[in-house]
Image (tube, rainbow, N blue to C red; front, side):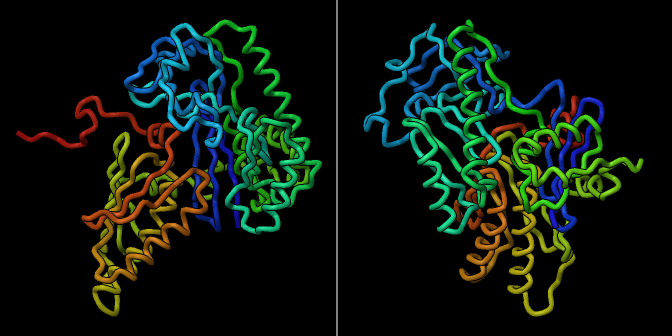
Length: 411
């Protein structure tokens, strides 16, 4: 059973996805600092750095955006030159370009932008210049994949690119055509504004958290969407009325008085999931240490002593830890490099089964995540795409006294 909850309080909106009562996905957004990923701007090239194969672009934010050469070339790899040109041959200071944010400003870095534009709808992603068709890997039936690819090829115009999202599975041609037509209208408006606006200027902003959650997360597999704010409730129903009328009846307004996250046990799960030490049901535990670009996770048996032998105890703890780590990476929205120090196992078969368990659970993650493999020191390396500040940054500020070291100095 899957349930989706949206909690709105003052200037903060939070969404939570429960699977069989267990929290698996959580997002938070402040109204004064809404997400920038997906927004499009007309920007002006400020600096071109051939040594870095990149340019800095003024899009009106406090820090200039970073545009890498690969994000200037054609989106389709087959249409790119075999020898990569210098960024100086493609851009000059003063040039104006429409760019889209693909990674928010993080730390002291500006946003990363691209000219590979993409506009997500409920059933598909529209890429005006990509010239290819893709189908979500989560749609596994080959017959359905072939049907959707054929429909996309029939619907798209020369040069356009489409990605069929998971929500496209089983949808008729008419639904896909309507979604595509709406996205084309949005792109035409962006292109017109880009021609007449003077850089830097915003051309298009993606949905806020409520509508993004309904668009990207609320699939037919989810039994209900519970919202505790009347305005957000109407927004959700209005969006579904246009894009997925069969799901509109699953939206429910929470109005029984008790705070929604406490009523459904979500707050307690959030409090436990974001601790540096996370307990496993068996008695083992995980220790998390997170920096801007690297997360280290240590697995321990704790109170779990098993019942057969040491190798079996270690193996069972690592299997349970693999499932929990995949859930928490998604829940905390961790990005960058992740290193897991599993408890040492004696057999290759056990190590392989732990990786298989991790990969099977990671497949549910909407963010690109890859298990790279074991290092020579026996650590497991994972990478997860980072586009926004992780969720913990909304709840915790760096201590002014210890500067984030978290230790008390004793003379």
